[in-house]
Amino acid sequence: MKRTLYIILAGLMVFATSCVTKQKYLELEDNYKKCMNDKIDASNERDDLRRANQELDRKVAQLQGKVEQLAQDTLSLTRKLAQTESDYAKSRHDYDELAKDIANLTRNSNAAISELSGNLDSAQLQLSNKERELKALQEQLEAKQDSLNQYASSLAELQNVLDQKDKEVRALKEKVSNALKNFEGSGLKVEQRNGKVYVSMDEKLLFASARWEVQGEGKAALQELAKVLEADQDINVVIEGHTDNLAYNGSGQVRDNWDLSVMRATSVVKLLLSYGDIDPKRISASGRGEFFPIDPADTKEARAKNRRTEIILTPKLDELFQIIDNN
Image 1: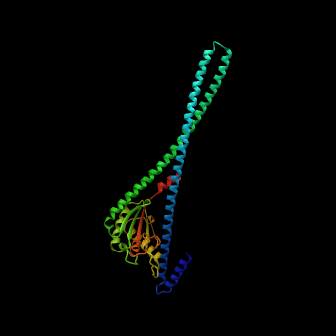
Image 2: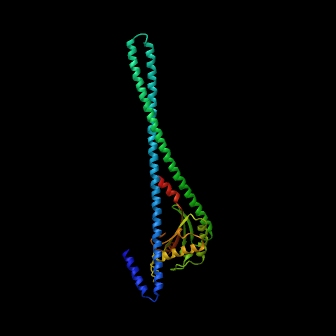
Image 3: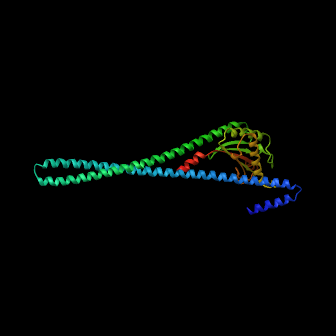
């Protein structure tokens, strides 16, 4: 980081001593700072989304664990309930048999009657205890069932939202694919990954070599994409510029692959905003340099793949975050 800062300061000093006016220099310096701030904002948004996904995964796992524990508790209580009911039935049977014995022996012996009465009282006490135990187990079972129903409801609600978001992403991919179908053979590809839609454009579609001004057919593709973004205000957009691993030795405002990737991403953002009525708060640009290659091979073909601009479309996740907070 320090080395990069020294390079930037050295570049600014060299640039400041060139024939460029001070006002032009200040404008370029201000543009550069804005680009770097945009890059930080995009990184923060990416980290927020990653944390949201991690928090969502943790909540789903937690809810599933609770559901499994409740299911085990319910099974255990059901078994205890069945055993208690069996004991209760046996006690009731014993009680009835003792009552019959007392009725038969009443005619013969007061002593026998007294003994059987004691046995009857004991059996009746056991029966009462079993009834209380049965009632307590039933109450526990009902409470466990209520908790199980609540967690199952929360899990179902969460799954419904996830399914809806997945449906929205699929619909968005189809909408974007239809809008850009005329360009998919010209270095453009539309994919659905990780709950997002990725529109990947090769360098040859958008830029001349080592340049950052969008050209011909690339402008037409961005115009079509801007129509989709203008029609759907619930889509957040991240523009990522990527380069190959060959060193870019520039001067002035654009000196290396970091600068080139940022300038290309920013150029795409500005064109999208100019082509449609799109809230700039929905869009951010970031330069990734050569550090996220599609193909790590050090070949001409691999470098061509890696020189690209990715437009990442994400539906709003407000409803999903609210469910996570409520649970």
